[in-house]
Structures are given as C-alpha cells and as structure tokens.
Image 1 (cartoon, one colour):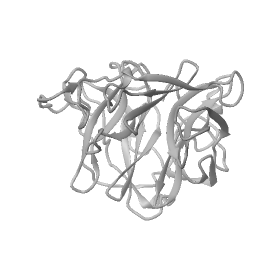
Image 2 (cartoon, rainbow, N blue to C red):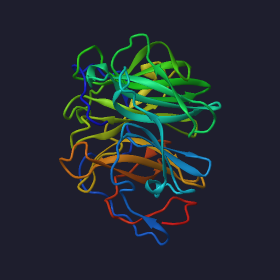
Image 3 (cartoon, rainbow, N blue to C red):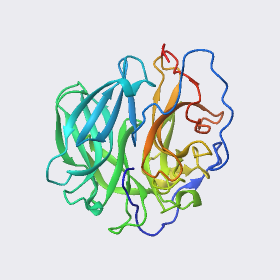
Image 4 (cartoon, one colour):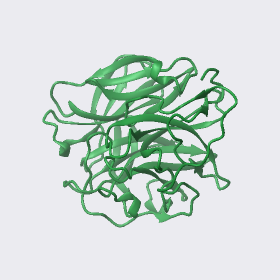
Length: 351
C-alpha cells in the first residue's frame, strides 16, 4: 500500500499451517524458456501500485488512485499486457474535505448485479493515518464508466482503522475482508472478515481471521494486508501481502479454506512460507490481483514490485502466468526478471 504504516503488538495466529509448494524468500529466479510466438516484458506499466485488474467483455479494466481521483484504464481489446496504452477515465474526484478526502488507497472495482462498486481506503483532510477507513462508490448504471455516487463508509460494528477491503462470494453469500488494527494504536495489521448484508453494508462485527505471526510477515512491522480472494475448482483461497510494504521483504502469503464456514478462523490454514516472494531480480512483489487470459484458458497474476532494492513505494506493475499444483493450490513460481521475454496471454494476438 502507498505511504502506510502498520499496527499494534503481534497477536496469536488463528489459522493452522498447511504444507504448500511455493517460492522461497531468497535466491534467484528459475530459468525462463524463450517463447516462440508473440512476447511481452515486465513491467507492463512503468509506475503504479496496488493494481486491481479484471476482465470485462473484450477488455481489461485497471483501477487506480492517482492525480486527485480514482481512475479506470480500459485496455485495448483483449490486451492485458498492453493495458498501459489503454484509455483512461476519471470516475471520481476526491472531495476537498470530509472523511474520504485524502490518501486514497487501493481501489477495487466489483460488478454486483447491474451496478459497479468501487471499494477504497481513505482518510480525512488532515491526512491523519489513524482515520483511515473503507469507503464505497456505486455506479449509476451497468456501465463501469458511468457516474459514481459516494455511498460513504463501509464498516463493521467496531468501526476501527481499516484499509485494503475486498469482497467475494462463496456458496451464495457475500463476504468482505480487510486489513485492520486490533485496537486504536498503530503497530500491527491483522485480517478481518464479515458477512455483507448488501454491496454497501456489513453485518455485525468482523471476525479476526489471521494475524502476522510468521517471521516473514514481520519484517519492518507485523503486517497482513491486501487480501484478495482466488477461487478454483471449488476451492477458496485468500492471497495477502505480508511485512512492511516499504521494505524489500514485502511478499505474498496465503490462507486456504479447509472447513465450511469462512467466518470461522479454524476453517482456514495458512501457508508456512510465502507463496510469492522477491529474488535477486524482482524486489518486494505484493498486493496482487488475479485475472485470466483473453480466451479464459490461463490464469494470470498482476502485482506491483519495487523499482529496485531500497526503492520503497517507488513501484512498477508486472504480470505473469501462474498454474495449479496437483493438490489444487496455486503455483505462482518466482517473479520473472524485468526485460525477460514472456509469451503473451493465450488469445492475445500481438506482443
């Protein structure tokens, strides 16, 4: 996340560990075969953070917070890797004053019924980080580029500090997951989950889902943030960012739903090590979103990484294909070095 700090003392882990194939937090990347067809190279956007990318009809939509507003970039037709060359649309302008007027972070665009909703974190005009909360915009029509109305805060009954909220639907029920402080003091960030009563409202008080208890989640500060749901073959995962986003040790961890109730912390198991971490060529990969190739046959991760070691929040946007392990868990491999030719997504004709 951009310009953020974390939260209180570390709490006990509420999820069991699960053996999982994944990358280590050290070493260089594996060799990448040279593709024979059209290729692209990372980064796909030279500046950016917290990329939220989804496919809609024949295009990819990238949601970003920058230049005083929330923007949607519509890619050229069926062109994920060329999304930086798409058309840009400002869909909302930050208010001059109010609860969501400054430090707007990590907008996500979700299609629910015949409306679009943008979930984002923001704080007050004085830029006090302690006032960061989650907010939601609602579109006027079924067009993602239509006018948006600010529906205000989306929060559980506790109403504490919250960022990086995301929604997902599991077995017909909608849930909201976010990163929050365990109290009112900065120092640690946990993951919380609540049932959604509507696209703009949460039901009751959120459940503490997971805490940053592993060493790789505690570099710079104990943090779990940027949760994103990933579903495949009837399985549900939450992939999240761990450690301080300003450090070179930012990485992705994962929770896997092994029980039946997403609101029960014992129904989730945590990967014992990062599932996607930096190497000698790519530093601090984090805050990912997931999409598919234009023909729907491949899965792709879109993420940000630091421009170089020590760059902190100076970031670029990358993408690469990922596959699935025999046990049904995602296999992200290792981040591929900038400038390495990669095959374009299946169904994307031009490199």
